[in-house]
Length: 475
Image (spheres, helix red, strand yellow):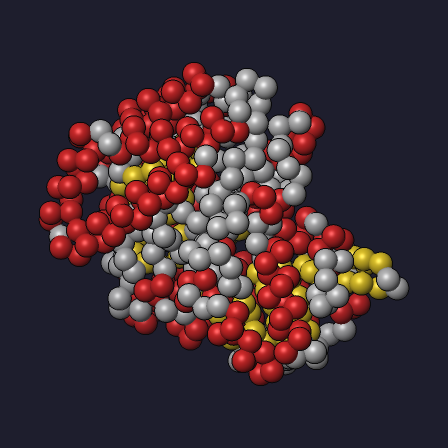
């Protein structure tokens, strides 16, 4: 077995590269998600090491002294960070010319030929699900014999063929044991989870067809494959006992609630464990299921509302009716389930009128917290292809999705709505949602109940105002 280092590379200060499918950039409030995909790889390779450089605040100079200690380096990359990550790989190769280097992530899966040709230090890039691909390479299998990678052969990019998708999710080992070995739980936080929290997956894939969502369209597919309830419950029980500091477990499946029977059964097992948990959800979960979840430890749902305009929701194939989402939200409020709502400004069909409609919609729904972002037209998505065909994309170069300091750029523009207007709409949305007297009073009341919450929200408030100030000076 090769001595292997799994690396989430250092990049922009505060850049959350581990954010997965939707939002790889700096955020309104400094946030970090667990590098779960890399941890899954590390769990398959005995005696390997996982380093999450952004979350640890590590720079390249902190990492290079260990380059000679390893035989195999795997980097998790993304479209916005790829150029930076290639430079990291080149620096490692200069320190250790014998180092075998591979890249994984949606960007290289979609752009495999360009990625393998980006630098001679890259020995291979991975295709879709790459767990057992990496395991075979770490075990010493010749690259040409490994299915699911692109290599250089006879001076040209050569794809070794598609690897079958993983059907038995229980065949993957637990990530939490890698977390225990290599990560610091207090490094991971965001503006709506209890701190410290822990995130992991119970399955992969999403049956929804949202045109902007990256991983179901590139890596994990639309068939939702999930671990057995017994397997998940056993891992959570182990994590509960080995991480006594964790206050909340977050299931980062694209849509855990896609399978109603499964989530109800999981909730009942989690209730027996006495843990607090949260998950991603679509705004269509019936009241009865919500109640079972809430009665068994559910605290928060992260809900992608995206827009308050029904035509836009149809345009992005969201599969949600506005009136259904309103009832779902009412049910959550009645049950005491906290909602973090996410919205996107500038989706196909957006106008000045629909922007106003969505802001009013968010105020009516009144989730506890919100995230407002710009459409991230990642290569490999329906949205990217649609934008290219219609001339909406300001640049074909994916690394322009974020600015030089990691802040998300406005890269879509329509004949009737400029990119500058879309960019400005994000600030307007935040201000009109949070600066309402009722919302400010509710947040202040919560702060007053707990000194630790007050300290945290004061810090986040400062970061939020700096974020708005920075955007205003960027626009």
